[in-house]
Image (cartoon, rainbow, N blue to C red; front, side):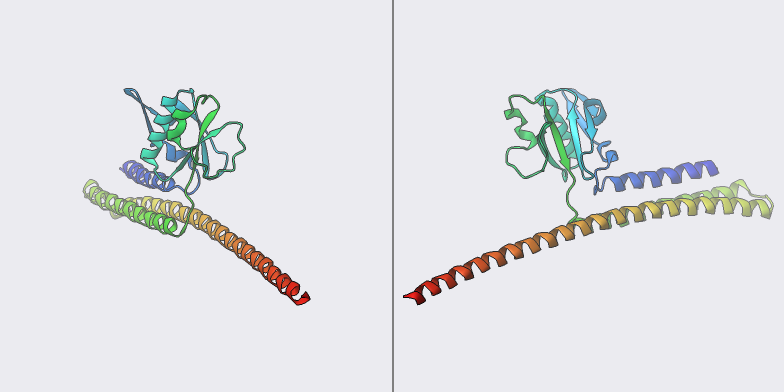
Length: 246
């Protein structure tokens, strides 16, 4: 019975952590496990139809195993169905990626390409801005509460089962069973807490990077505005100086 408890609790905690991975901040390989690629009458998982690499922490490079346009589109469609938040681009293998927002590089435009033998799909995780930060943190809290409710339900169920199973047993044996059951509960709740805190820490780090990038962009804009203002002021002064000469 303790083995059953451990198996059920471990399953719920592992499932919750898997769901955390699908609240993507970095490019988590586990997030591609749910992608189904439908090609013709068959359905494939990602590893059957493509090789996957991570050029950056927040990116996947998806390299289809053959160069058919239909496969490219099927992979793109499967990813969109599971992770519509991922940015999808079609890139050249020999291209030095500085992912921009060039028009015409979306997955749907692959049909317009003559040669796709050197193409791959670049997936970029969404930035952790204010809205996404709050959404993921709220998501982690909700999933954690849901998992704790499952652990509590198992605890209650097996407390009753142990009481029936050990009816008539001595007090020492009853106490030992309760202690073992409580130990499993505490162990899995602590593991869940670690997973939750790790995910939140990952979100906070990405959010801080976003804020720093925003500050850097704002400072750059202000410096450019100041430079333009200085140039305008100098031009005006030069104009006044020329008038004074006359």
